[in-house]
Length: 361
Picture (cartoon, rainbow, N blue to C red):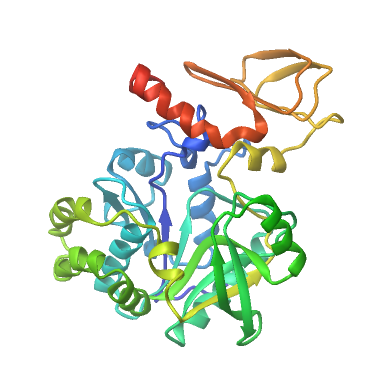
């Protein structure tokens, strides 16, 4: 596919991935891990995917300053100025706003795709076609575009987008956004045929998103816009280090997408998964006849059903009589809990940090 000098990609890679603890740790979060033994981490796979449709010099990684060396190590072809280092974590809206001001300083006509660093895409050709079509769509109008995924189950871990009228081949006006619903509501959504999973992938022209930010998040724009003459210059880092920590902690969905009237969705089925939880990894992994998943290690299972076991490669797990459990060990932490109660993992992480310090986080 032809690339275009006005096409840019922002890969967000600054999270800790605490729902994947103990594999995902503060010093080595999940985006830097190779979950499937492919030899490439989730971040590297995301980069490999987008460089097929975006010029490599136009791909930016936004991450926490803690991970500067990890990004450089995993993506050695990147120049230092392609890695934007956040001095502190401030959610997706400040991350995207900074990247947008930075890109506008480089190219005031830029059309941008924004993507998390930890998604899995099984049907890559269909996905890249949707990205190319989406960038073309936002280049021609003042529209904010997100990718919607046809749901195959009533998933409570994803947000949902309700579609309105069609505005062209496979593009629809967004009617409503709903954050992670309860199971009964998720079932209604899936049965209605009007609701799609919110992938967290966005496309827009750089001027469209900056204008939306100034309209709907003026307190955020007030922190970053004054640095317009510094963005894309050697003075940018000092400005960001001083001003970014004062930005509001708000997501792009809540801050802009749920409020703006010019939001559209492109629908697709790309074999997409937000690899955000052990449950999503379980769904994607090969299982034995009893529904057990074993990752990396060896296992001998007796009277066991629907478990996920992930230990270091040299370990053998011998398990008897468990159903629906997660057993995961990494470094100095062993976690055993009900697989369907993974939402409590963040609590375990917080408790361990409070009681025992950062050694186990």
